[in-house]
Length: 364
Ligand SMILES: [Zn+2]
Image (cartoon, rainbow, N blue to C red; front, side, top):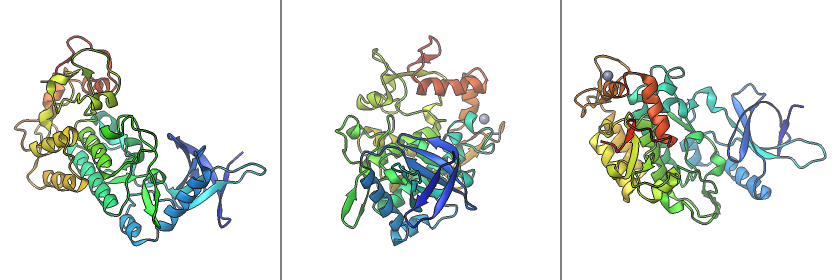
């Protein structure tokens, strides 16, 4: 039986296909002439609090701070348009909200992350596109912070990209914000995308702008390094790899200390990064976190005319002018000339695959 949702004013929508599910909700298509979807949150810890949170976000849609954020086409944020509840006779409904379908103008963030993943959906995307996405993401986060919002659960699953290098963000209902003096705390966090001070912190420890800034740096690193997580790698001192978060807590990161991790030899080299961005990443992971605004400025300057060079052998190989020869050609050679090998090196590193002799080692 098809699900129907109804708003507080009695407006009904029929839900169509199930599009996806996340840590706390399920997203469905909505039968409407506009590109809309509905997110239903199956089991919120406090349903009344959740409804109030959504109602406040819907109301904020008309506030100047939110209007400023949403005044970009296509929209950068899938803001809740109206709170809804499933219409199921004789049973408590499931709460959620209707929002813009980000698939209308964007693609999932993961489709841009690696050269292999982007081949089919974004065939013309290059390192320059990834740089633009990083800048758009930093711009959006800086704007959110200026308007008093904290994302809290910033992660690839909540992000969208387009071929022009623009970013989109969903799951606004997990953000932290204040409304009429009341704090609506961020509740969620995701392994691998959590600032060190929040890892293992008591439940309910609120995020802040600085914890968002840490995750921004993780995402910038992934965008610019072909998807590689900055804290990927087996502990070089021996012992088992546990998780990205364990590496974060122990400072195991190639950028901070090359001798701290073992990585597949065919992962993207560090000198792919312009010096200024490398310095910012080191600061972000080493203690003095740059703000989103600082990232905007640095990333914008790296996309300025004259800062990028295209490889003579392959027009999809774009790199910083600081690199005298093409790092992507180098990488292809290192991995035996096959894209598959380069792809599997990053995937292997991110998944902490088996340390195969000859393929893994201390990064150069
Ligand atoms: Zn090349």
